[in-house]
Image (cartoon, rainbow, N blue to C red; front, side, top):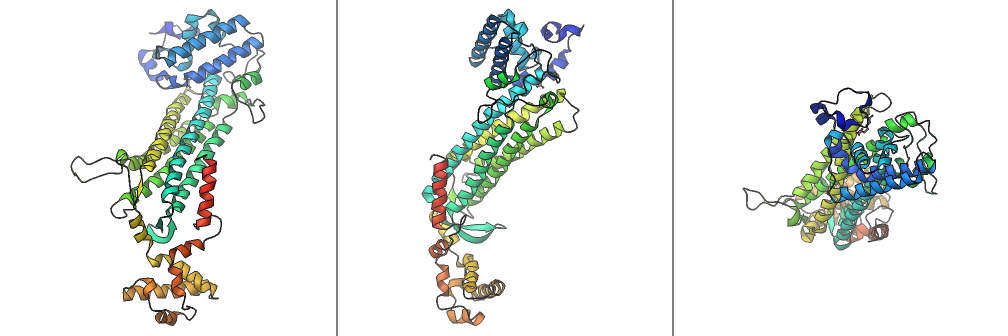
Amino acid sequence: MAKQSHATWGGRFSAGPAKLMLQFSESVSFDRRLAPFDIAGSQAHAAMLARVGLISAREHAEIHAGLERILAAIHAGRFTWDTALEDVHMNIEQALTKRVPAAARLHTARSRNDQVATDMRLFLKHACGVLGEKIRGTQRALLAVAARDGAVPIPGYTHLQRAQPVPLAHHLLAWMEMLGRDVARFAAVADHVNWCPLGSGALAGTTLPIDREFTARLLGFVDARGKPRVTPNSMDAVADRDGYVEFAAACALFGGHVSRLAEDLILWSSTEFGFVSLPDAFCTGSSLMPQKKNPDSCELLRGKAARLQGNLQTLLTLTKGLPLTYNRDLQEDKPPVFDSFDQVALCADVLAGTLAGLTVNRARCETAAGDPALLATDLADYLVERGVPFRKAHHAVGAVVKLAERNQVRLDRLPTAEVRKIHPAFGSDWQQVFDLKRAMARRRGTGMPGPVQIRRQLARWRKALQA
Ligand code: ARG
């Protein structure tokens, strides 16, 4: 029995929780990472209590300094966490109580419900900032590959069948867009959680004359013009976990993007493709087959996507059907959020490292992209420019492809006379279509793989990433 340790809520109990219950219900083993946010929240709360006269200036100073010392002890690894004290909030409050008598006034007009909601919003804002920066780091690694080897042609694929040639940069810039949306999404999540729940109490606010706007401002819950943002409903504020779900969803989407990108790299680095070689530092060997070099970083990136989706699913399931307002179930919201944060941070770094060590095998790419059949669509466009309706042009080029296949020659080696038999609109210049450089140069519209567009996009990203 641990009656003593439950000084924070033990008043109406005659017996403390069972040992098994303590073990079952503790969260300090994982929520202690909220300590810096919890302390910032408590310091702002104490400042507000002093401002409205609920504690004295001296008590405020004591609380503030005591919390500073606790934070320093935590950072230095000198703080003893006690699972019997349940969570990060009570561990810190008890430690403060031991140090300063004024600690007994800190929890005035506050509940752990609005406290934990505040901590987590502070954490999420921080996490979104960190991940945004990390993903930008990955984008810079990507940009470096695109700047160095971007002009190398590769086949673009649909249905994993060679479809149309593109410069490598175009494919890399597709990944860049995906990651760019992730960065923007994390910024949006940070904005969505940027509302201060402190002052909502357990669920019904407080009878005491607190100043919520003051606390919000101190904690940085402000809009672009510096106006404080406080949650408008105390019941929603302690029950709402939307921001966690949105954060986990942003992480899961990032995971999905990274897994697609990793899959491309796995294919490209296989002997069958041979477009790229992955850095030794991010691959492993086989314990049996001496020749093997396995793309483990990419495979794990692909695998992490499942874990990130699982975390999102956990949060969605956790919050569905819960009656308002706070329920202890909600303590289970933290491990998936923290795990998603940690894994995305790792994935972004590992992907950046893998990309930084990538080498592009130019000859293999050129051979693969050099099949003139990949420009069959351009040949149809050629006929369209000579007045042939596209459906007819498509059909005619199909017949040309068939003829080349039957004669076992490359598409561009068919005699012009034979081709003209298929459609009279084929002129003596029809083979010019297969000049890859020319084919790319003709793709001038926004978003297309023409050299002018690619240059423009690279410049845009260089500027956006300050690279
Ligand atoms: N550790 C708790 C959590 O993470 C803090 C809130 C506790 N509130 C309560 N009413 N028991 O959810």
